[in-house]
Length: 462
Image 1: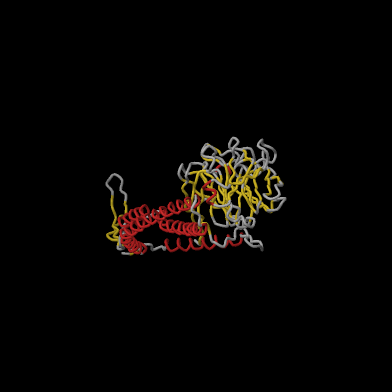
Image 2 (image 1 turned 60 degrees about the vertical axis):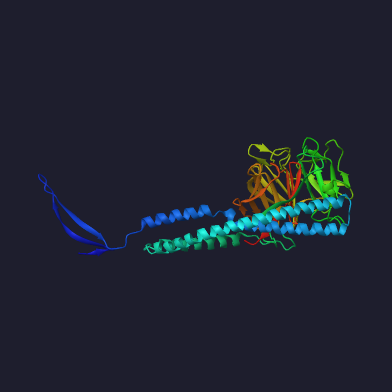
């Protein structure tokens, strides 16, 4: 009698089969001396784990933090508006508007507090319900590991650790050192983009809802005395062309649509230097936009009124590579300007890059030129918009009529592309025609079907 691997051989003998053929066959009875594997326990653990996964979602884990971020920035806005009202000492129309803005902000803060309290109570109830289940899961899983006599689990854990170390090493070897300059692209002092909260504020432009294409914002590098100025461009000709820039000296004048100043760029009829599409920005007291009917960037000096331009060789224009969603595309969004901490950028696509996004950093001088260019694998007509923060290009896609999602990032320092982001933010109207980041206030300025909106960008270490 011999024992092998917890099995003992008993009652071995010879079996003689019936005539006419006399054949001998061996038979043995096997008895398992080891402990039987608890299959039912494993199935119960898998079911419990699946239930926990469905009960605790990614959105729930970040919900409280998102609400706290929104509340923080609302309180900052309220503090600023109260201070502005006190300093203005205006009992006229501006004072009335300021009080109305403060009232709206207080209502929003009250609503955020109510949602925060409700969410906190829900999370406490969820924790009380799920915590005991997780403790049972951990205990039972530790027991199941004892059945891993060939140490498969241990080896798998070691393999995962080795793979992580290899991936980290590969990333370090492929990384390109940042250039020695201030505010280098991709070298963000705030950490990574973690969330977008808001909208912080939104109003319909004074032109009404008839003009759904346009752009607006603030100069990230303003001229002295114009730190609080806003600019607005509405494409009043077939949602495609514009010829003047409207400026406002403060947020109050923007809301009241008074004390405006119009700066004419070109004549009303489209010419070579007319504005085409909503992809324009203001930077260092100059206005940058897609030149009419050409693959070029125009620069309009707000002081001298001089216009210069630079060509983007091979760039698609006139709706060749616009932003799109589903079966619809956004007119004349082929060439899109952006700003961030390091300066001025332009986003476009070319046939040479198979219609994929091309990103170039420009110098902000009277004669703009491309300082450096990157080619991505992101098909431009598969995205709805882009913006740049800290040298990282982010792309959005249309989710539905209420939400847009930041799903893609390209780091200009490492060259790494990521398509697994999932940062959603709520829209006022279905289509976003213009989206740009301002590093001075860390806000996203959005033109959303005639609504002009701001969102707070939330940075942090992951």
